[in-house]
Length: 308
Length: 305
Image (cartoon, rainbow over the protein chains, first blue to last red):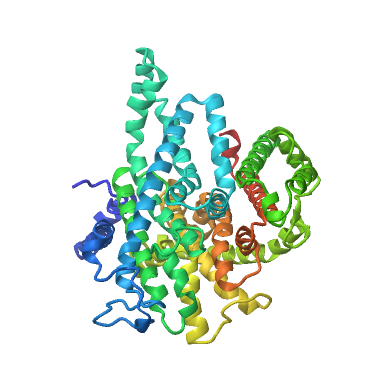
């Protein structure tokens, strides 16, 4: 097992104290250090478990959902969770469990595509800017500034309003509103990689810039990419849910978590589960992505700032 | 220092220019506004007249140039829904939005920094774990979900706060906390990691060896330096909060820019959308510029980077 986990490495300055301490205290400290590792393991376990549950929901909705997600039953509206409807029914008598399962398909598919698109675009732009420097760098960073100067939700709202809704447009809009983070972080990594001997040697050996970027820089930012992309899944899921909640994302009757929460707004008092169930599932999905991203960051690039 | 300010000013100017290009392009993507502004039975000649009045018959670069000229004079077109200048409509809504965003930022700082410091000082204690749970929760849910939870719990169940509206201090509390939690989580995590790093540095060790009381070490020696990265991060939160404010304003019926943008999109009142996004981007760029300058003043290393 790798021991480079940030949390688990004993801080150097604690060492001398440790040696001077009586043996029982030393033991207690070591227990504390193992406790932290257990804490991390439990977190990772929760993240992986939630991730597997949600992914299987997204991949096999037909198999897992007990009812048709769009089957309206006006005699069964606003039913509290029970044995027949495990998570209750909504204002049109549709089964909440089935809708949440089908909703995960849309939300997770959209988030996955948007992250891949934004990640690839941002990373390629970032490494090119960092390696080439000069004008290319200035242009790329000003482009990133524009994206960062417009809050993602507002940019996405206005764009969807402008180009109209479709799943493809939604993915496009979410990526357009979210690529700058990738560009910024990979650019600064490329800046430092540019100074490294193997890159300089490749340059001396006559390799073209394209080749150096593709063969030497990109593989070295792959870890960063994986970490950023995992953390970004959570951000995109939230962004997509926000758009759908505001009525500018996935359109009814296609179930999506955000739109389901919006449906439940008027029934907060009488039927909390219409908001609560998709809300909890949404939190579970984001939680899973965030915890997994944190664990990956600790393993793959411990130097990356927590701010990202 | 002056050189640095000038360089940043120049960069911000370019950013704002480019933002106006993007907004202009997006508004053009929407298509011919005369279809929205005139009744369906209007003749083609009427439409052509309106296009000429609005300058839409000119070439795209000329249209952009005219738009920029208007912008410099503070004219952002007429809102056809309100039948008055769009800029005025936006500025009226900007007050409530700024109030909500600043209140949320205050909540985020007031919770995030002390909690981050406490977690760093007592690492692996219950405080640290509780803070971690707080942060993980805050980053897992969008603000509108917290808004709904708070309404159900504190407005419907306990009846402590109103479910929405604007004007009284009690109206501000729930939206500010719902909006601020996400940023509080980020600020807390960054404070914790930055503080942990500083507490392990040589100069803090020296201060301890000298016998400086722990309270002074933590709050005077360590915190000052640990807060440097937190400052930049907090300024970036401003934009995130303005974005999050859209859904929070929607839930709490808060008369801010977010709700205005939403209503204007559904009413196809695009001059207002355009004005709102332009003003929002201007404010955000200005805030970032100010923070960068303050940051360069505090930490001279930045100026030469």
